[in-house]
Amino acid sequence: MNFKNILDLFNPNEKLENNQILQKYLDSSKSEFRNEGDTLCLKRANRCAKHLLSSVIFRENSQLTNEKTGSILLPAIGFYYSLYHLGVSLLWLDYSCKESDLTMLHHSHLKKLLKSKLIDRKILSVRFLSVLEWLQEIREETNYAQRIFLYDEEGYNYQKELYMDKELYRITGKVFEEAIIVIKKIIGNSNKIFEFEMNIKTYIGDSKGDDMLITYLSDDDRNRVWKYLIEYDLTN
Image (cartoon, rainbow, N blue to C red):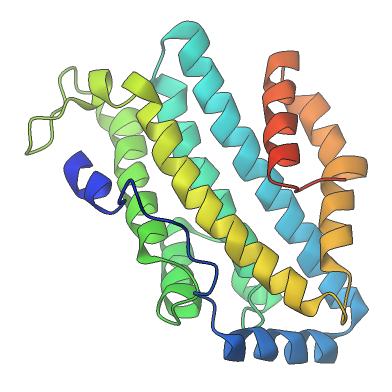
């Protein structure tokens, strides 16, 4: 998929839909979470929070690295992993995914699960998978080929133009917003069964999340991550 195809997925005047998640799916989620009990629901909340935070860390660090250094080597890898972790985060809240499905999740299996569990059910937009696969192509080109001049069939130069005007940051931002809406719908509908929202925010803000930020990020990185988390109400 080339850059023009990716841009065509996003209408600049499009408003994010809040009603895309079917009520039947939400009711099934609530029922299954009730059956699973607090121990497994807490594990779902913690794993969702861990991967959600990882996704924000990779995205913000990738953008800041590019802005500070002009390098695209590590950002090309980081932007892909931001969506990888965001996808894993979503799947931990899918009631039909079992723990065994999500252990040591390979990239190809992640895409299959996203499609069968969320996209085919019309819970998540197909844009998520399209952008994920596109970013995987960019990551693999950067990791393995490292050709000096890389153009797609439309004549778009990935090494030069992809990072101009924060294109990768903007495109992934759209995907993040849609995914966060899905997460908030699921946890909001099930909060009477288990306090998902409180546990996710606590993990990110007061538990393991803060340790992750201190361990892996610079002060500037941490500030960017906290700003995003606060803006999208993902921490307490």
